[in-house]
Length: 253
Image (cartoon, one colour):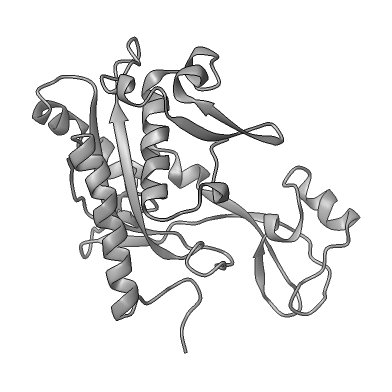
């Protein structure tokens, strides 16, 4: 029997996954000249303390007193504001056995581990790939000849001890991520390739309605704050559509 939150890719699934990753690389490495790196999946406690993950990377959780099942609060009520009041007022019941749920508490979602034996150092399996990029920034900045903007990408595994994994491969405890971190001068958020995409259109979601705007108009009207953000939003949309995703199935909001 398997354990929830872990997923095997068979012969066909593994090739499909590899094809998607390689297509993503073409967009960010070939089209945008980003730098690709690979960093360890084990991350020091100090790094994740500094990033806020040790204190803040939590989900509010509630346990059923009868059948001992655990649930993310957001899965059993619609709003995390006033959690206890919402649980009591709505008489939220355990989906498994029907017992009333109460006493929500925060749970950190990271898997902890130790590095070394004896005076071992505290560490975690990384919850995301970004920290490896940030801790290497000074080396990558030198590699980029100390010129901005430049981008760094990483494809790798992440780990989150999900309270209630579900939705197939959407909410897993071990999963693959493709992440791009783009570093800009905060005083200059233009993009050298903006002219090549300014007449393209983006699928956006404004308040409660879907809109489709040219990128140039979206930037001019401040629907999108700057050229750099608009460029990478379009790059993401172009990747998804090239991968075969129906544009009616996604939008930026």
